[in-house]
Amino acid sequence: MSKIVIYYQANRLVCTTMPKAGTTHIDDCATAFSLLESGRNVRLVCTVRELLTFCHSRYTPVHAAGGVVTSSDGRRLLMRREGMWDLPKGMVEAGETLATAALREVREETGVSARLVGRGPLVKTYHIYNKYGGWHLKQTTWFSMCADSTPLPVAQQEEGIDLVEWVDAAIWKKRLQTSFASLWELIV
Image (cartoon, rainbow, N blue to C red; front, side, top):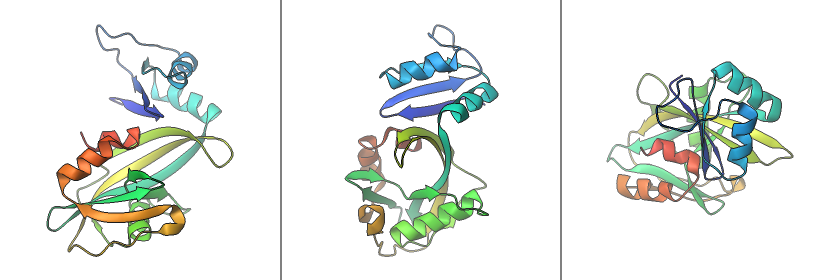
């Protein structure tokens, strides 16, 4: 593990197995998460096992997958869900691979049929939220995708999506910079 970044609102906890010289860090998960939840950014140094054991004792794990979709003319797919700019993603269903779930969610939420680009996931993002009756730690595995043409997207309104559109890369990046903190990992 080089690092795992977990977002809680706009605050981030960076977990690594190696301390960074000259940087203040915490080596206790409970203290680190308490600081994160009180509005601080935190650098945690621990093993992956320690991090996962702590998270599974405190949060319900949720596995999701989604896509960064680029059209043949270079534009990117973007949607607005409940007033926030977002990318298509959703929960992995029983028996599905992460890649299959990502492709399905893109199609369901936007109406766009895409295909995977590259050999594996782009990145995994993590965020903590309190919804559906409890606290969850959502791990989303993101895939790079392309669509052969620029199909007319269709918003899945029952999921709170009111707009789906193709935008140029600069607009895509600008909008995501003002959206959910966990999406910032995709626009680096």
